[in-house]
Amino acid sequence: MTGSQQDPKQSPSRTNGIGKRTRLAPSVKYQVFVEVLTGQSTQGETAEKYGVNRMTVNAVCKTAKQGALDALAGTSTVGRPGKSPEAIELEAAHKEIERLRATVTEQAVALHLHQGKSLWG
Image 1 (cartoon, rainbow, N blue to C red):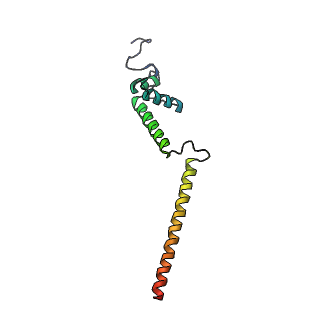
Image 2 (cartoon, helix red, strand yellow):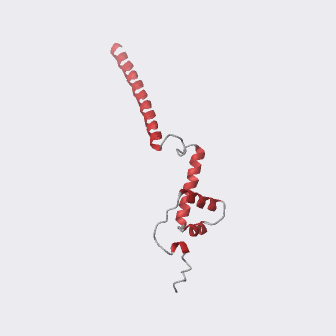
Image 3 (cartoon, one colour):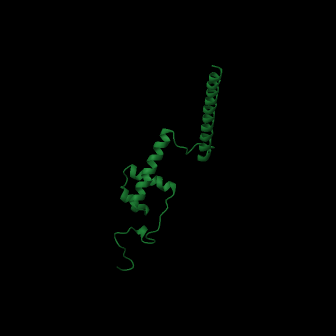
């Protein structure tokens, strides 16, 4: 093979740095997802175009699909202004603590009433 020829099995974007990880920006991942979703190109074609393997394209598509489903189901925390995932988790923990506190109080009152009846009965 001469210096100007390339192996036809390798895409031009992969000739320098074979084996190096290609990181895609979120906007590029979205474009990858849209191209595959709309049928503009196959996963293999998209992978070659962006210099990644098909497993990466598949993972991007699965992640995008799950993110969309979560958002539509209202379970996604992305996009909620002013609340980080940690703040949402902390708020849920405080609610659980209050629920448990109320349960313990209720059980303590019931136990006190039960013991009181047996002492006076």
